[in-house]
Image (cartoon, rainbow, N blue to C red; front, side, top):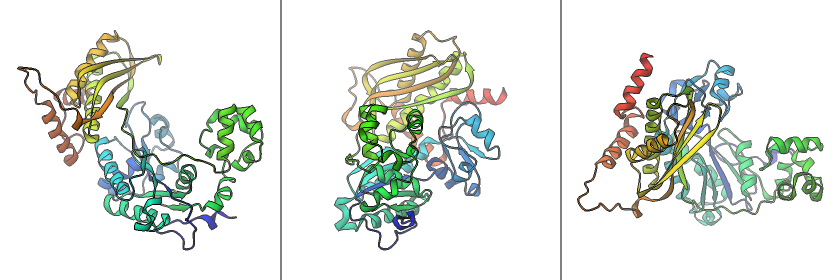
Length: 413
């Protein structure tokens, strides 16, 4: 059967597509970070745009489809992205803006069904089986989601509609960008078997190489191999898992959102750094980001962790659990600096530093109790005011004085 016969792409699904056995949706924003940036820079539409560090050894966070045409993709080193697409416009990331749009998009999902399983800030699984009577068949719900996301937030998304999470995710990928693909229950095998075997969950580079050595290049090739052979060649767990997926069998249900276990940020320096003040400024910048993300998500945390990667790629982590949970950047930063100093790396060249908060809990369940005679510092209120200014005027609207000085030093260098 041709793919056209099982595809419904566009604002509404093709009339006659059988979605009766397809309660699972996978919704994926198209080039999410880049799309959010273009809302404020419409003159860049149609041009290759990359979201990432303009200089240094970071990675691509997002790229428009015009940039992807040159081979640029997420997680690619920025140095390589600049080399293969020198005409691209590079935009530094603005995480606060992405979090705000992500929360809005998730609210659209939750208005449709409580069974929403986010797997990233820009994608989620939905089980809309219980919403049929109220909102119509799954394909119509998928079309409605696409329309609401476009109208409310000015960005596009692609939606896969199927009977399982595995097939729904493959479907959304197949119809990108800005598409809707329904894979009827009776057509799952016809949809899967022409795909490359790398499309299967669990097939990484090494597993793909092992399968190619066995003459297995497509999902259909793999489906024709006896499961016992796959288990012998790939191991019992992996072989059995792939044998099931090759026939579209995926019994996992959509699991409603579970709280974040940790929130962190890290930064790779453009050149290895052994200046303690530069490293402390970066720890402050990362602490500000982590604290803002925690406040945006309604979290506080008790355990501060720092990640320090030396020039030889040796990675050291240190952590400390606080007496009281916090979402205040200054408290996180003070602890991060103490952990950095205790690690004994103040004059060691570092290529990466990171800050992470763990042991999270809802902010409204962790009211802080002041000790007798202790006064509030006012940092929490000040940082919440900063959040409001940043949401309105952009990520550089308000900065700690040390970060402003650091930026001026960089400009003068």
